[in-house]
Every structure is written in C-alpha cells, then in structure tokens.
Image: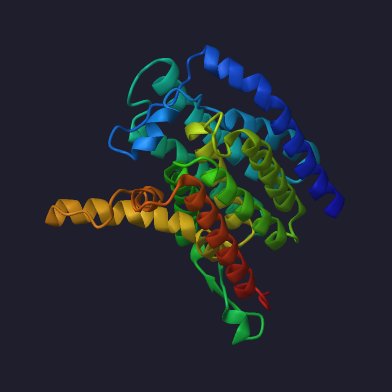
Length: 326
C-alpha cells in the first residue's frame, strides 16, 4: 500500500507541475483574469488580471494519480468523485463569472444545493452500501478510556454531519483562498495528515496522497508571486475532498482540529458580519482573517507561512488526539 500511496503522490505532482506551463497561457488567452476587491489591501490591486480557474491543474493531477492507483477501491473512488463533482460546481461558477462576465456566477443557493446533494449522496452510500457505520470518534478520549469513545449518531445525525463536514470544509477552503499559496499549502498539509489517519483504508489514503500531490504541483505556480489562482474550481474541490475523506475515515473531529485555520477563517467572517450588523462596528480590520493580518502590517509571505505553521501544529495536536483510539 505504501508504494501505491507514494506513486499516486508522485504522479499527481508531476502531472500538475507539467500542466502549469500549458494551462496558464490558455487561461490568459481566454482572459480568465482575477477581479480584485477594491476594499482589500492595496498591494493586491497589482494581482488584477492574474489567470484564475487554475484549479483545473489540481484536478488533473489528482485524477491522474488518484484514479490510476485507487482503481478497485470504492471508497477511494468515492472521494475522487466528490473532488471532481465539487470541482465541476466551482468550474461552472468560475466560467460564468470570468469567461461569460456574469458577476454573480452561480447563485449561492445553486452552489449550495449542488454541494449538499453530492455530500448527501456519499453519506447515503456509506450508510447503506458499506460497513462505515454511524460512529463519531472523539479525539483524546483514548487517553482516558481504553479504545476511546465512539458516539453512535444514528443515520439521521450522521447524514447531517457528513453534509456539514463536506460542504462546510469546501466553503472554508474557498474563504481561505485569498493569498498566494495559502489554501493550496494548508490543504496539502491536511491531505497528508489524512493519508496517515486513513492508513487502514487504502483507497482513501491513496486519494489523499493524490490530492496532496496535485496541490504540490500547483504550488509551483501559485506560490508568491502567483502566476495563477485556483478559483472556486480548485478551492471547492480541495475542501470537498478533505471533508469526504474525513467522513469515510471516521475522522470528522480530527479534521475540525487539523483544519483549525480554516475554522478561524470562517469564524472571522461570521463574527465580522454579526458585529457590523448588530453594533455597526467591525471587530477585525477586514475579513477573512488573513486580510486582517495583512492590514496589521504583515507581508503576504509572513501570513501564509504563519498559517502553514499553525496548520502543522494543529495537525500534530490532532494526530496526538487520535492516538490509542480504536
């Protein structure tokens, strides 16, 4: 299995890295330039026109490494189908906004409906066609109770949790995709941690290795100064894939810990909106959280590296919490 995992990672990395010089010029010709918020950090205005929809590169690399190495694993294929399905939703949204010039792209309810249906489909398949069960593993409980605690949710709560985890993670990565290399780097680290946790489910581990490889290959062009952005095509696919792998591997609460940076990005937006609507004041200089640090004087690279480092610490904390479970 270890060979399969590393092969998937290597193939995905190579395919994504090789596609960059081919895809980026095409995106430029299609005038798939990124629009920059006028109320954001002033230094971001120079990024206007940078090609977006580069998530195609991640999807191609992930599919190349993933489908080849997970063939025969229903669970691994399930993760990959969620990645491609969420990527398709993001692609349609990006295409409408960037290529067709429709500022709103897909309506929010249309995007959310597609995400919910895909996540619910995966959850129902797990419930009725696999031995996944409806248990929710509680991190750190193994330190106090032999084997740890697994809460039985029942099919209704499990279905709801799966939808929240998958769709929620997809939108959290989407919010985090605001600085060069931020979302891709954080997703890469979390995907690798899920490779470790899903060691008993070869297909899931291999699909996460492929996703990590796709992120690494994409980072060659997305690191500062970025030559391409992933767009919703990439961010929704990454988050959907991470959420799906966590649900299948029974690691939903681990993902909450490991993805703490993503959780903070979401909370920063919620807190900012609630505060402004109720008091007329903003808690942060700007949301999501990464922009707040920029406006506090941090340069972009410093913010990204700090968020990567925080993610690594959170992952190690989460892995420690999963010790002695099961």
